[in-house]
Amino acid sequence: MSVEREFKKVTTKSLQLLKNNNIKIAALTAYDFITAKILDESGIDLILVGDSLSNVFQGNETTLPVTMDEMIYHTKAVCKGVNRAMVVVDMPFMSYQTNSDEAFRNAGRILKETPAGAVKLEGGKLIAPTIKKITEAGIPVMGHLGLMPQSIHKFGSYKVRATDLEESKEIKEDALILQEAGAFAVVLEKIPAQLANEITESLTIPTIGIGAGNFCDGQILVTPDMLGLNIDFKPRFVRHYSNLADQINFAVSNYIKDVKEKQFPSENESY
Ligand code: KIV
Image 1: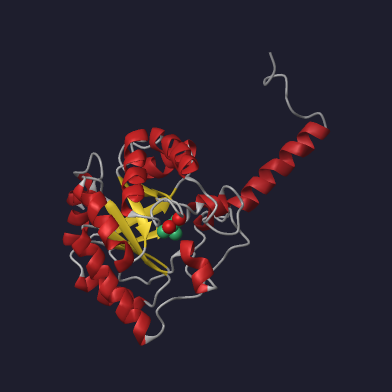
Image 2 (image 1 turned 90 degrees about the horizontal axis):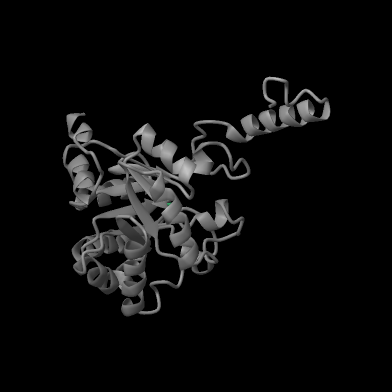
């Protein structure tokens, strides 16, 4: 693992080096300073300020309502907690789909107003010219294929994508097009593991999977999901590494009991 220890700061080059050395990339999402600091100190390679912020932080049903200003606000907080990990920011719905000039300006805003190192856009060949324009200006872009939550109203459900030949072929082609357009990595969400394997082998850039099996070059999960904070959401691809909702519930119940029974604060906790 000496390749990994060399990184004082993870960059697009480090991620490429991990793929080249067959070392998996570990990525998680964060939306606030404290969580980002803990993830970074734990050694995570990449932190995504995902537009899942809309669901797990703001309580919306979809990722569509979150705005550019909100993404920038949360990214500033996240970056204050991060020394080593690469920070990637989701471009929110309608910040890049209208035209490539607006996309370019918004991607530039993210890198100018925050210390983040890259942006992520959902989509295939339709947004390839936009990705080319942004990357040529020196802004690293991560792609996102398969289940693209910003297209939920087109898909109609959050079911696994590319279970038929036509869509598998399209995603394989899109992955190559994104690489050609200059993307430094591609997220593959909720597609069959075998398809993710074929895409991973066909690309020179890393793939990061979520619900896309074990063959991708890296994995990403939404942090509140994997910590067991978001207990009502447990699709097959989420593993609960903790049960924080229960732990918080236990702590808060004890606090309430102590306050009601006049057991908190004690003399030692008073001035
Ligand atoms: O917004 C997000 O958290 C994401 C991940 C699920 C990849 O895009």
